[in-house]
Amino acid sequence: MYSLAEQYAIMDQNLKERLELILPKVMEECGIECWMIACREYNEDPIMRFITPCHFPTARRLSIFLLYHKGDVTRCISVSRPDRDLERFYERDYDVKNETQMDALIRVLRTLDPKNIAIDVTEDEYAYTDGLSHSLYQLFMKELPKDLSDRFVSADQLGIRFLETRTPTELKYYPEVMKEAIEIIEASFSDDVIQPGKTTCRDVMDHMEQLTNDKGITLWFPATVDLQRKGGMFEEDTVIEEGDLLHCDFGIVYLNLCTDTQRLCYVARQGEKGLPQELETAMKRNNIFQDIVRKNMAKGNSGNQTFLESIEEGKKAGLRPVLYSHPCGLFGHSAGPTIGLWDRQSGDLPHGKALIREDTSYALELSIIEYLKMYERDTYIFTEETVVYHDGKVDFLAENRDRIKVIGVKG
Image (cartoon, rainbow, N blue to C red):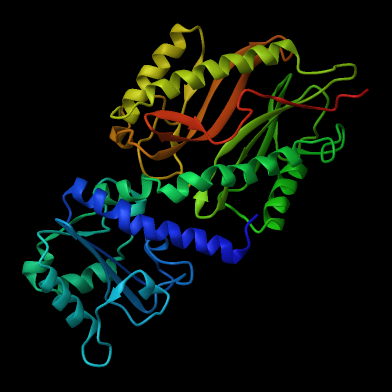
């Protein structure tokens, strides 16, 4: 684990790269010359956290950021109150004593004279790019001259590209973030924590969350632990017994990056020395489907196309596949192409129209359904691995995606 000062240094280096490398690229790609992000204290735009330094955790009264790119010129301007940490990354252009904030905003926009001004008002139900409050929108429509407000366009595509693209620093440290998540899962799916006949699923969930807190890391969703056995799937206060197949769904936020992981654990019966062959075979078949999806996650493919091709190939391989992968990065369910939904196995999802892009990251989330004689029922083989699409291929951020951990082996 890094000290807090080291974490802040890493995240601020990442911010520098995001503003200097990612921003001009995606603004050029989306045809946007000015991106205006504005918010009031404690009602921050979701994107504000990723365009400001660590020591600027909230907006100050009304904070206004203008991100500008045209030709070879990229400028990051703060039309906000003075702030030393913010001004390491932004040029402040607001004379607090001699002009109003709206006068300063109009003056700067007149100087920049962009052909369009992207604002965070969504047209396609993207939560990340819907952060401009109604009152601020009304304020801008009232105070800005019509020839400026007429240039407003939705920042949907720009925001998606900005959020989904990983920086060099993020690509470097993402495996370390994933390592922290895996260590918590491994420590929780263990003989030290689980005593068959006594420990409940809730006990394991509480242990995972406590370990996360002890590390000074944030959960991005509550840990989930359930189990499958004869009779079905059970969770919460169910007592874990020998022969159960445990499953966790677990995600953390560290260095501003989210993980999303599902791993399996088998509780050995008396006399068993390892994983039953049925489960070993089922896991290998799940890995086949993982690789099918990875192959179809090709640059330029849409999420919907990836879903349809993968499901078809999975069925041809004799599998019963279920696919519901999603982008994962600065948010857990992040910006980019949706590749199926758990409750909507179709290739016509609105957000599935987005394309697979270079230097993006995903939760490769899926399952296959296998009839297991040991449980006398259809059993879900759940897996979820955080991956990156880099240099034209999908890479796993952690090892052992093909492993079902075994605990309770005696002798």
